[in-house]
Image (tube, rainbow, N blue to C red):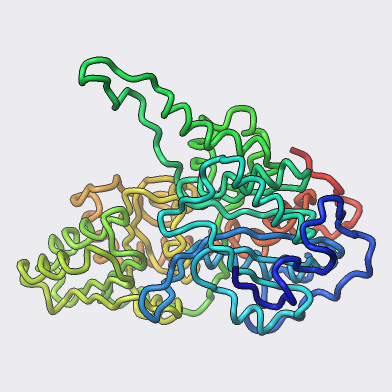
Length: 462
């Protein structure tokens, strides 16, 4: 295991390694919270200051995002970095155990060395296997690691449809640590009928289906809180979580509003999507939508911001449609402002999505959006008020929505401004980061602006 900012790995914060009876010392002198500088700037930091003094958080995550020399970070990495910044602002110590590629180098440079430490564990390979099976040996290994960190709280960012870190969650809960899991994706569907047969004639027992269900349900029983970024997504998970569903929390993705003026009067010249160029993201549907509009709007172009397996076939399709000069594949662009500065319309046609960060970011900048009615998107985009929603795969409906925006500057202005106001009211980063940090720490989530320390809780209400 590779460890950064540790004399040896483990332990992380001192003390003998793997000492079972070691109890985190919560009475020690508190750390000064991390100074808000650059990458550690976090909205609402003042409201968090001091609530994490004396707390030690172990954060478990996976990032297989490196291709060649580029880190293709996305919404999960943005969420993790913001959460770490919030915990540091609260005065907590954080130790990260991650698999894959480090996304923490600049955070390590900015944070006090005794407040943030990072360790490469590589528990999960690119298939996200290695921790989802609840094997006794794996759970014991994770228990030893968690003891060595001397953490009092474990925060796990789930991947793989909500099952990737099952053994880590069971280990944390079995040690009596506060255990919080965050789910950023739609649940993987569990088949209803038998798909295995004996001798091709007799359906096999559905034991494998029950195993899949228990891989999701058992870890949930060890959680003090489970965070979902949309109510609709939480409802999908609750069907398989049983009584564990009582500790579910819905905290949406957040974004800071950009109040720069936008030109809604001029005819839009650029429609775009930002994200992986895949079938799941509806990249193929988007090209067909553009093709249906191209002859009526000769000044309009389409840009894909992102890479993915569909790029070659979409390039071939664009050439066949005679649109190669008007369809641009920009590749991965790290600076989000560089993406949205050149977008007049955001069209995001995912077939499967929990809550799109790219749509959220576009709305925060006042960009009119067309999205699909999947996952938690209806909680973000109010159809006809802050954007348009269409059914996934419906080229005609999506083209009709885009056409309305192209032809009506007053509609673009109304939806764009309403979208920006909605983000500021219901999805602003100060609130969402604050709620996430308080949930991790076991604090009662206070209404915005309430700074009464008497509302703090030592143990969560679950």
